[in-house]
Image 1: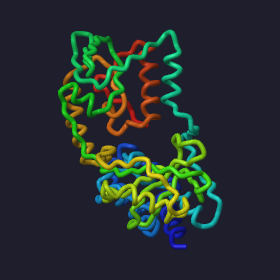
Image 2 (image 1 turned 180 degrees about the horizontal axis):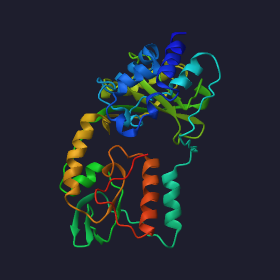
Image 3 (image 1 turned 120 degrees about the horizontal axis):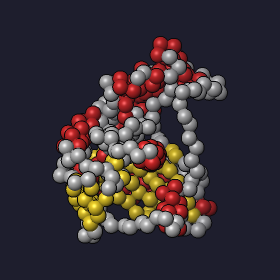
Image 4 (image 1 turned 60 degrees about the horizontal axis):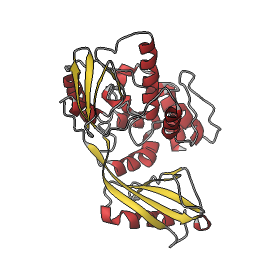
Length: 334
């Protein structure tokens, strides 16, 4: 129908991969919202992108650049794949220049920590938040919330940008999304349907996303229900229960609300936030720390697990070769 025709036209005009094949540097100048309309077509954008995006923030995705496409709450699809999917054909096109990753359901961080703790070559110390970081000659001096002080040669700092910048005296307070989440448990016998991820596309539906997993009680299913940012904190539980029933996932009256929270969540991946980060990062670099800096403090938005693992391996390889940390502390984002 309309979606297939518009997506096919986009693929013909922009190429099978659309704007994704442009040099990465050009992505900063491209608007996420405009790219979505051009890549997907107006109809798909209105039905599947615009409405759900407003549930996260009233600004939607208008201040997000294409360079940050892996950080927002809505995906961008390859135009050729979208055209194939909505034409009734089995999608067969795959980008040959992109890597694909598989991951299981194992908690990678817990498993990694368990292996490290079992090693005789590694000692893990949990000291709480980092309060101060200073350069002291050829060393880096660290002070933690529990009073622990460490002097290290080229430590690897995988600390959030807010925490690390503040510890160095370069304050960074990015604007954050308001997040409303409720956890609901139901006996397996009362569950009509389960899904790894369900996202109602109706912009007026207060439910943003429902997923399953976690560690429910024996014989039960645990639902994580993410709600629109406009939902009142006191109503989160009832809205979540209603959503699970209305969407046909559990039988009426069988859900048990375990907990609900509302408050600041992830930082907004927008151009505005990026400007704030660049200002704080500039002040942070003036400290000239002798340290490897990974994660979101090293590169804006590089705060996901896979990015930090890749950066850690990169730093380990260069360190093994005897290389010093980059002067600007920047690591290429995935």
